[in-house]
Length: 262
Image (cartoon, rainbow, N blue to C red; front, side, top):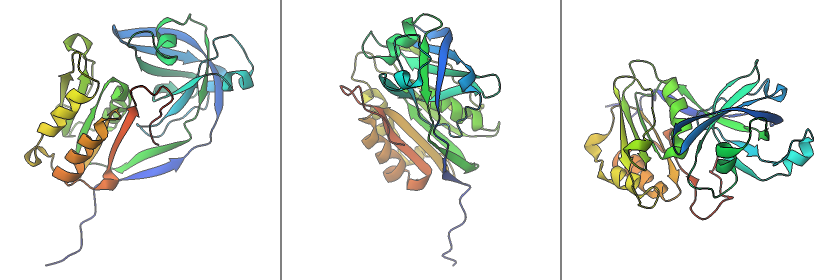
């Protein structure tokens, strides 16, 4: 019997990008739910913007004043977000924000900043891209992971199979996820529970028999506490290859400056 392992259907590759800092302005906002908003940024500096990986992180800078001085913008408070969509020729970029209360810097800006407000965009500095075609997909996260999940689903062909699991507050806060027919999309409601605990419980319920077939790409991202449950499922129970999964905390309760590992 041959001991040679058959080639995997896909691999994850790291690609570097030129780190560029850009000035843009807020031109539109659209509320998908009462706590989830999409904003459109525009500006000549956004021409040439690119993001190769669905899980990319860029840094947004919030100066709180109208300025053309990139140094002033660069010194402003900043947070990391995933680019959702963009047009490198027309010079626009769309970003989504989960808005819970008025704490922090980024979410209140996304929710209330006047149109025309200035923002800085730094990066992305690098990307993780999927080379090849996963046999199946497993994507799980909270609202902060939805932009990445939406970008992953855009990579799927119509024959794709798998499962998507998203934690939100309740049914009124469920978000639209466009996925192929054979990719099941389900929501976990946390209610008043600590963020990520409902999703972790849902992951812990899944058994080895729930594993999607073949070489599965696994992506789990939410509050930092989700990491242990994500690794238990993907690596321990499902035996997925460690270099074919991404498990990370996108944010950490009580740490405004926390940023996800790249």
